[in-house]
Length: 153
Image (cartoon, rainbow, N blue to C red; front, side, top):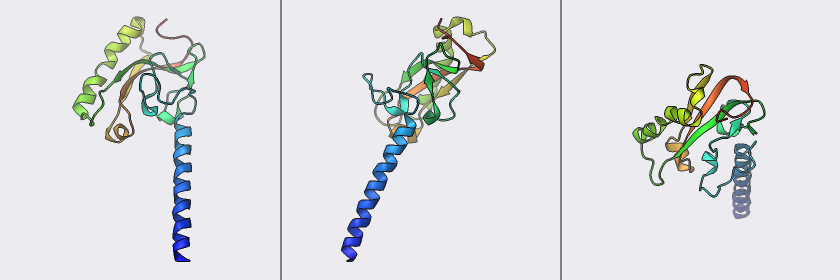
């Protein structure tokens, strides 16, 4: 009887764990139809691409709603820099990639550089997100109020 209870308990734990993983994955990819690993090898932790527009400035990756840039949006991805695979490269290496974001705005939308309503935010991996496949520094232009149309023109 004890063995049967242990087997049933282990089975319930496995099923519950699988359901929990599924729910986390579904919430993480909400608002995005192509959030699975794509042809460029991006993981769900780094699935944004240059030119993506966000309805609202995301608080977390799971709360992002990607919209067509012709719709009102509060942020736009201006660059994504992929770090090399392997062990976590350390904060100094990540910082080096983050420094590329400000010049990326000038490359992506030169007219936005002098716009005081545009700020550059950086989303980057740490050791915990590295372990789940995050390899990107994502540079995001955020706006004081929603806009329509891409910064890139």
